[in-house]
Amino acid sequence: MSQDPRNTEHEGSRPAQEPDSAPSGERVPPAEEDLAATFVRETEVIEESIEDGKKVRRKGIYLLPNLFTTSALFAGFFSVIAGINGDFTAAAVAIFIAMVLDGLDGRVARMTNTQSAFGAEYDSLSDMLSFGVAPALVAFTWILQDIGKTGWVVAFLYVACAALRLARFNVQVGSVDKKWFIGLPSPSAAAFVAASVWTFHSFDADAVGFKLLMLLVVAAAGVLMVSNIRYYSFKDFDLKGPVPFVVLLAIVLGFVVISVEPSVMLLLLFGAYVASGPALAVMRKMQHPPPAG
Image 1: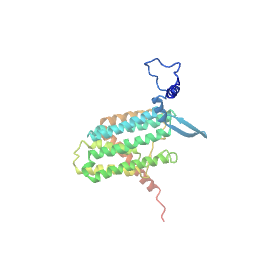
Image 2: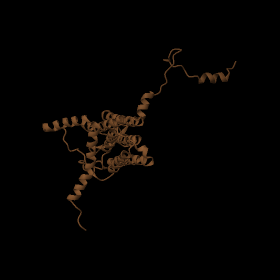
Image 3: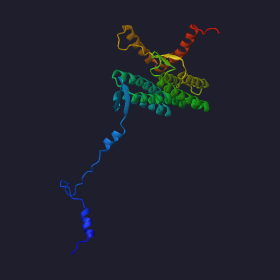
Image 4: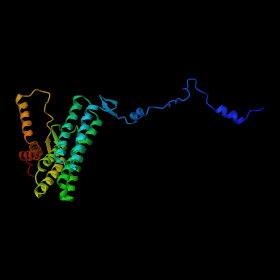
């Protein structure tokens, strides 16, 4: 009796059982790559740079300096939330904390030789939030919103100037004198605005004088960031070398004075720094007047 060809075909297409197959009732795991490993590979950061004339391809990021940058970013975001909730003291303090952390991430990267293009870009994005968006939003939610359209236009002016300042700084790295900043640094501008809010919010915020003063503070800080006025960078200070004992004593006294009335002292300190740029520019003009034409 001939065999049914359909049965023969069916039996011939059945795969042979593997000799080491799992016992009945157990599921054999699929032979595919682990999802976690796939995710890590697909999201890996790869940088290419030229070192000693050779093209170097580096995979991954440095944790320590980017941890400081992330902390600064968190402080800036916290400032935004505190400003929206009306806690202007906490919002101002968070901006100063972000300023300290922003100063540390670059120094830590240089000290540990962990500079990278990724870290530089990440730092700029963090600065945009902490020193661009946060101060403008805190000033707007405190008093500028009471002025109407003029208030939010001035707040936007500050944000736009901060973005332009950071972009210009990034393209000028290595081509300008490190002793000077071209334009007011964005952390100092943010500190000036934050100290103003911190100092003045306890007064009568309905007074027209405070509204006009904050308009002037925010607008001036924004315009000075994109100006060509030079500001001393303090980068030529040698922190590793020995200093006279009186320097340490002066630092201690500085902390004591600031702790007496932090908001007022910080406002005076950063107000003086903001004014130092135009003052030095005027002094240079007076010492070297343009030739009579």
